[in-house]
Image (cartoon, rainbow, N blue to C red):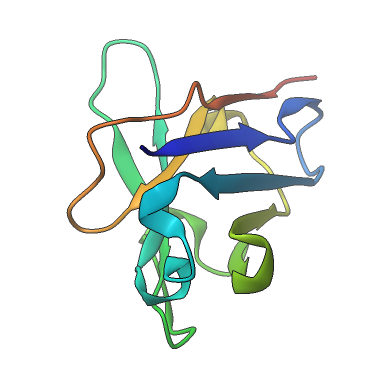
Length: 119
């Protein structure tokens, strides 16, 4: 019913940039993707998945403190897609990044996309 496919990750040097994409598909999104608040989450080994940024149906965004000023979340409702522009990346940003609804995530998560920040 719900498919979330993240992409755009990779290996980047500190200070570099990446843009992540997440395409949502499935019957539940048919013509109503725009009503959902969506979020980007990230997870590192041994830690719980945490919210990084959210975007409401109206386009209001929110960020956790450690990415404010560096990351930008956006969405294209016509494409059922959420983006995360990440600038000034730091080694601490290394993680697997996922997207999902917020605050009540769908049970089905995508595979995520690995972001590695290293020199």
